[in-house]
Image 1: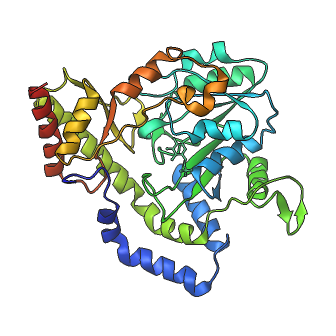
Image 2: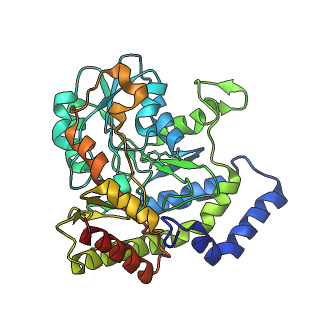
Image 3: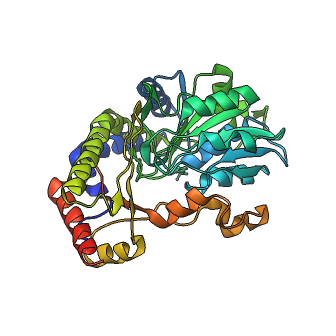
Length: 372
Ligand SMILES: *Cc1c(COP(=O)(O)O)cnc(C)c1O
């Protein structure tokens, strides 16, 4: 690849000594499970987010799962979410025996369309999971308004949106809980899997602390049926090194996105592609820079041939996945999500990406459309 979609080695080079010494510290202590490194990191994230509590867990998927576990879902209970997301947003609902109810998205932001919520709410609706996709918040004002009117909890899937904001509030701090992932490709990535739940509710925080250690509040006494889902001390130590850099990295992603916007406009390509749209009042942190492209699949082959990294997030909307056939959705049921799945294309936008590389991405796309 001439331009990789993501180059984690570029970031590691800048913080190598600090990361290695953090890892060495954990090994020297031989203290791997929970402990001071995890609790310190949790406090640092809560401060960064501007919320009261943060609970480290084993992954973003588990952050969603544990949040839902606090609602005691029963078979037949429903959770409203979007089909245009990573699988786990809906998979966790099914895992608990409840039913995901898919609602369509807005074409300009790829996020949950609040106008679609109300007609899908039933007496069995227990929660709504909006996804802050690609690093931009869904319309939380409208979502919370409908949810509150119906007494339904809002669990924010902020896995791609650590540091994103809406009207001055950080993603993950507006709903019942916020769910974060430290999967290596996220804006704050660990050295393996990791996740975190944010909340302002002390009772809920205590319940989550118990649920991540098999529902136990003191050793070998179990108040709840929980699971084993902890953030490793090793992850926490590395993430403590990285967190102070997050704002800088997010800013660089924003600058790269602005550079692309300018280059695509200068190249006269705005009749061929649609640029990402940032809603006024939102701070977008560009976990992905995702365009909509005419002739997308042919463009992809062309980029592949010319060594330009790219990826489709996500090619198959969840309501059309094999495993969800029993839910009975048909092609055409959620037309915006289905159309976006055929048009979207994510391009390299990582913080260390040089402008010359972005110029190459844009000129390659320009060459493609000159001949198609
Ligand atoms: C990454 C991601 C998850 C899951 O996070 P893991 O840490 O990989 O379990 C969930 N939802 C979205 C939108 C994600 O991007």
